[in-house]
Image (cartoon, rainbow, N blue to C red; front, side, top):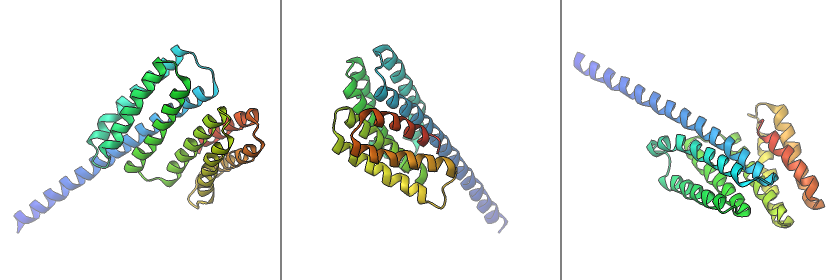
Length: 219
């Protein structure tokens, strides 16, 4: 009887260790994903909004790859993450390097935004925080909308802005929303973009897009 009790305690002990290790690993991955997302968002916004020179682009692309390198091993070892999602990001990073080396800015914008979309799928598999996921979706949709507007595609851009508006409404209406002041600011700034789509004024959209993305980074 004593032996059985000892064995049970031994099993419980190791189960607790495994649970603790898994929790610590998940927290580490979530932190790294959020860092990677922050770096990627900053780079996408800069390339969308500015006429960046090739040397500066190459430096920032290197930083993005380094951020991914710090994350990839933990993702591979985590059973929750589908390996295909990891491979998709690898492939997109390779495309980004090629488009940057070719100084193809339009293709680079496309690849970076696609990478952001693939990062959302990784995040969904490791943690399901509705507010953070929706914030990423809003940014993703606004990035796509601005890219389209630069090419005069206002109708297509309007669909992405509508998606962003729906997602910010979910955050706004959530009873669990924290930091309500900044959520309100983000809500107003995203909703304003819907009105500007109807106006089809690039200069106004440019300014309001910057404001909306800044506000989204604060929630």
